[in-house]
Length: 255
Ligand code: NAD
Image: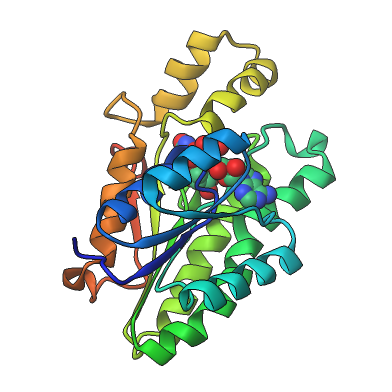
């Protein structure tokens, strides 16, 4: 268990990729603080399974994030591993894009990582050890129509990752993003009806001709594959990987 004694905070870890990352970090011995929304009973079960604690901070609220970070510091000595993963999506053309959806996506998918990172870095500097892993996306490198806010936020997180990596390079801290292609999670499932509507397609057409059209492997990435890379980034052997945007997209961005 390579992460014994480490504290990991994973935002948006009540489902999908974040849940898989929380499980994988806990399996390596990390004390995990999970975050995100969901049914109380499911969250309770997850906490018991992982020996984790849950914080309900809404990642669109800077004051809530500050409270969660303070709690993590006071109860566990602060995160040694910070995974900025919480994210939402909305699919519609830019001229019909609801401004409140734009604001929510930028707040949750981009600004929340600033608010956690700025509060996590001092403790990591003190320990001269830290790992910050941001779940970006293939959309941090390329665009798709009807996803203006998501693509803007993901390009933003890629730039933020590089900047913080440079600022912390001499402090034993690495800062990277993982950029998955399509991973089969509720986030993807939920955008199918809107994409059907926006493009006038059937469910099967959206899955095969829109989602997997971009992915040369023609299969969805699994949350567990992403989690395994996150664990690797926490290992000592990964200490020279910083400022990287690591694609896991079945060849999508190679095209
Ligand atoms: P998901 O919907 O399964 O999980 C999202 C998580 O974020 C949940 O735990 C949810 O409760 C939490 N969350 C949402 N809004 C929140 C808020 N305001 N405050 C706190 N938590 C909040 O989605 P996922 O596919 O696992 O997505 C996780 C991350 O991976 C996102 O950043 C997403 O952009 C990114 N990503 C997903 C895919 C994909 O194909 N699924 C591809 C690339 C990147």
